[in-house]
Image 1: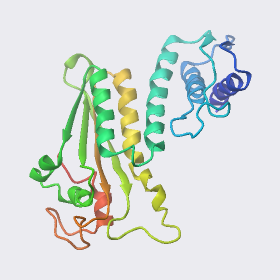
Image 2: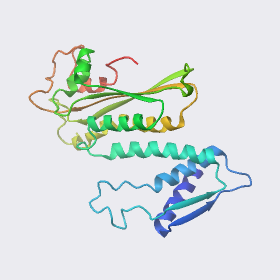
Image 3: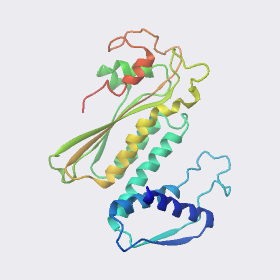
Image 4: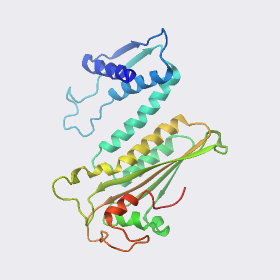
Length: 269
């Protein structure tokens, strides 16, 4: 949209010109609608937040973030600016998780990320089911995917209560696939086009859910209780890995079928 192009242009100018302070005057005749302003601000914030964590030369001019310390948005709607900050923070969290390699974005680190959100924001609570608790609940398909991995599974449930503590008018659930690396197990992904080196992307749904949790925890929609579910694990090959055709606590599945079932098989909200 034009608003996002405007915000992206602000970020590009700040990166190219390298000012420490900058200002932008928003149109006033007529004033931009609040949602249009929000879209522009989000684009600017995202454009000014490069991810250099895994760059070999993070301090080079090409990779380091612009030296901008302050950006004044003259005529900005305060509510639109606040919402843009919240939405941008969620998007940046999602991007950071999805961009991380599988040896960093593990089920344990996803659970730690969820804990940071729960600890920071009022009304957010966290439950993480460990392997023994999942076994007790008969979550065989989920555990079958995980059993070849050294990294323990983490079934993550964040819950955001409705503001004020009253009975919510609506309950919403976000469910994200959290397979932080999918080798395929004994149905291993091999050969041209298997993209095994990219199989960290199987936690993209989890990254999106945690980003949404970060945003909504700050926005706190009125009258809404929100649940965020991530069944996180790794699918690896080892002597302990699930054999194709193995009998689990749930019906017979193959490792590849089971990995798609991990966010459907489990405890109810």
